[in-house]
Image 1 (cartoon, rainbow, N blue to C red):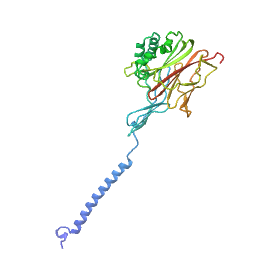
Image 2 (cartoon, rainbow, N blue to C red):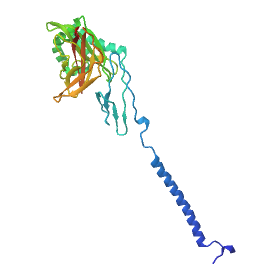
Image 3 (cartoon, rainbow, N blue to C red):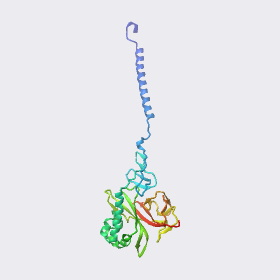
Amino acid sequence: MNNPTNGGPPTHVETRNRAQLVTNWLLALVAVALIALVAVFVLRDDTPSASATTSTTAPASTEGSTPVDQTTTVPEDGTSTTVAGATTTIASSTTSALVEPTVPVPTPDELAAAAAVVDEWINALGTGDADTAWELIDSASQQAFGGRSLFDGAFSGLVEGFGAWASSADVLKYTNAVPFTDPATFLISWVGSVSQEGTTAMRAFAIPVTADSQGTVKVQPFVRSDLVQFVVPELSDPPAEFASITTFEFDIPTGAVPFVFVDGFYEENQEVVDQGDGTSRVYVTPDGALEVGASHVLGVLYVLPGISHAEAVPFTIGDGS
């Protein structure tokens, strides 16, 4: 047997113990590495970063208009649906964020251009200029009317209706930007004395104006649906006189989104109640007091897919209120 003290090599027993020692050290190192790796996974923060969820506040609105919230749902196919009165939700397969969009504020020039195109259209009808009247109508209304030949066939009725406003001398005109529309949409409301169908009375109308991506504005009078059923103020001839109005009420098709303007101011305090018969009652609480003895106009625009329906109703607040 070999003896270490005699200078011979260590026995196989000692060699086997050294190899075991090295192996134990290697296993220990591997174990430490595994523990560290597990700790990384366990302690990693899987919560979304601040950039994945943002919340911003829409700035204040245009002149004569205040903004409202909206709901815009963006599915994976890129289409969108816009509804007033909620919070914007942007959803995709990877992120979900709540955002209140910025309301684009039209410039005074844009508001003036929207008002001017209605003046021009009314004057064209008043003078019997069918060519100009047709060219000032946007493509959606041209298609809704059925083409130029049908427009020409109905032109005399338009002259007697809208065209009669060209000779009215006491018209009050209101121009409003409709919130959350891109390209911009405006609602123009007129109220005044006008002679139509053999009678002169205080009447009103409202008409949408659309702007394309280049800023060209045109009227959109014929992309319409069911008439607004006015309850308060009621549609009457002569206009109704009230001691006061605390809540406006009217009915529109269920599913339509209403935008309500009173004397050039957007009214956002509204409630929409489904009545179960295909219509919804809209209750609107005006923000401010209405001037006694003055002529007022309630302008209503409601939208559905492919529809932009506008009407107006005049009313007064009596001196005895």
